[in-house]
Image (cartoon, rainbow, N blue to C red; front, side):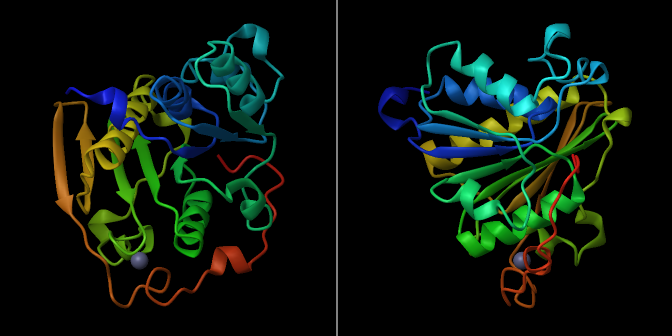
Length: 242
Ligand SMILES: [Zn+2]
């Protein structure tokens, strides 16, 4: 592609979860003309994280993930405006964290947080990117309120319910692949105005990719009826949901 210098997306991106997926997301976006990155994670780095969370090393064990990620990205001197939030996104703090952001990237792989982000996306009219992984499988989707199916729209079709993982059963390279796919969605949407209401599945066992058309559901309780059970629960997340 050409002409990138004038088309880079001057947007503020909030990355929820400073783990495996977000390591590469933060590095790639910081080098791509993004105006601001906010990194949100209340968790600290453990030795068991190091295989998949490629920004972190032994010296970071015990430190906050969001803060370390911010410092590493900032040390490269390319993007000045990076903020770390040493807390978990929840139904109480979301407005203070996300007001003014243009895009949310979910890097948590947590059903609970994913449902919350979906409601926040509709309520605050902020697009978000979902990635989810299990074993050698990856799925990803850009959700734009009013333009694409939201996460809740998908649950009507049992085949489209996003997979949920614990990192224990994800191949070590899959989070980095998810990062690349998320950044490709950012690039295609914000630079090329390309938006497909689809969910994509990658199978790294046979290197296949499947694209399934999705659509807004008129009866959806979240994006059509604006019912937000996770937000109204005022559930405070005091420990890692990621
Ligand atoms: Zn919906």
